[in-house]
Length: 541
Image (cartoon, rainbow, N blue to C red):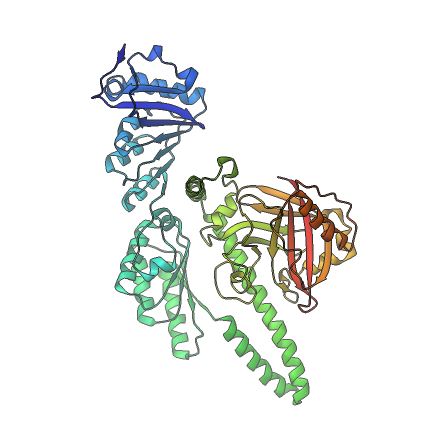
């Protein structure tokens, strides 16, 4: 029986890319009233009336289960919010389906929220927007949520911590607070605590007694314990220091809230310098000897502080990876990439999905994270970031803090998703501390580059794990001729390969073809007058 009545709603059920899609059919299409006579097997779509679905929900529920099994489907996409209740009723038997996405830019209704909770097999929800209490309710029932709607914030707290989406708020592990807090900051901070479930560290800009006590009171009010509050201030007042010690003792014992004081690098350097000078003068009594010891001490301490800072950052990053469930982040980022591709009319084959869960977790620390670099038998094992220019990460670390060590970063011209012909990674040569590219000099030693194990460089991105075979190592006077990213044609690229291969201090006998892609590591050498450069070709993708 075929219905041709336009007053009823026509619902199209189709299958695409391992998803069952439910949408309203607006064109004049017939509505099948006989499940047996459908052509689902031949063209992957069916059209039913809403009346028929309501009257035959049990039959269609079994049918959806069979579809999910036959086509190995684990996701359902619903075009409209008002269609969601009807669709969710059909998923009761389809236990293979674990993910639901609602495309319409509408706030999730409580009715839909309740229906989702009733479906024990649904683990992931993607929608435009939903209320904070719904996130908590769904989370308690084992459903993780991703919202596509950005939050319009007014407070400095929300802006400084880049809390643009509810899912960002929910999974944030580190936040920054500037004292004194305005009324808007206090309100948004309390709202943040109501939503967030993973907060571990709070960074505050200074020690203001009443503000600190108020902050702790708010944490206690919201039952937030086992936290660390890091106070960034160059504290010299002994009364304040004693106040901090006493408060830390109380908070640690009662609430497992730990207070920590962190001095700025500049302050530490300055005071260590003065103390070293005083001690040297007392011991030696000679100005020349004192100056020599002072310089050595300053350099040693400065590099020790730098090493400790980077090690602390690496430890924090490892903790973030350990405690973060990146599922929500991966799905939100993939959705964002697909939307951007659609807006920019980028071919779908050029869009890759995030597969590296560790790097995805680090997006909660810095959304500029694009990869990780490992060079064997050196200290180089760092996440890689990418700025909007090649200047920012020369003096900022991965936490976007001002720091002379900078961080390891990808050239801003390179495509972080799809490799270019030449993908360039920079880092400071912190020789004495050995951080960043401070141990890259080892690659120019014959005992290093003749070892086959050392000739493989690992560079993983959010989207794929890769290894590169070194084919050229050299030092060159300060120039930018090896920093070419784009090439006119294959001949241009091969001429470039010939140039950089001829410079190599060793013949690696590694061929590079016109369709290959390479990675370039660049750092300063010989007090900045030269550059130490490594080129390696992609050997697996």
